[in-house]
Image (cartoon, rainbow, N blue to C red; front, side):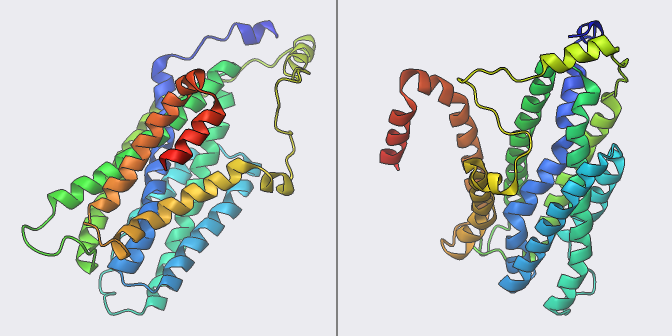
Length: 324
């Protein structure tokens, strides 16, 4: 590896933390989007399931289209994406003044542009945040560590969203009344939750923009560049398997992690609605149950390496099946 690369200093912890919290606004809004959009549309606004599903579907389609397009552009205009999220997301969970008697079709038509703007902004922040890693540090280990910190903040953001929902529901609860059914009276609660989440995410975005500095590295000489290219070639070691550089869409369909992500999103979308519609649980259970799921999953994932040292993966897998 070239001398220029070796002489680059390691990142200070301050810059590491500032980078890791830069995606917090996206993470907080994503938790709110997946966990409570259907609940809000159907139970608070009274949407039919078809209209509620259409709003969610259009948002995911907009995200799917915007992400690769923004990836090709590799835009570093992080502020634009943040502004789009901040200006659009609170209105998705807010009741339009004077629209109480509007039809579901009219409300859906008003929501769709906001959802598209939010998803485009969300994709812009995600792409620019990931693409910034090579501009911050040339070290592979440092880049991996930044990704680890980014994932940790993602988990904390999910937990934080459920804590905010739980606290707002408890603090604004009336002494008497039905605490089992979420109705149109919860519109202000969801608006307060959304404003708190966006405010927290905006603060972390400001910290990210102020604390992260892009470094312009000196281009490598021809000799150093050839050495660098040789050094990044994967070792021909049969004990390690690598993903292909160009993975086709058929290849993605053969990856088990692809379906795990789908299942996770499906559970996050339908679990709160199931608690309300089928189990008739207290309103704050739509925050408590996802919170317990996230915290327990995080604890188990941290303990798995030590468990695998004591028991094999097969024994652990069989034990989990028997426990269930």
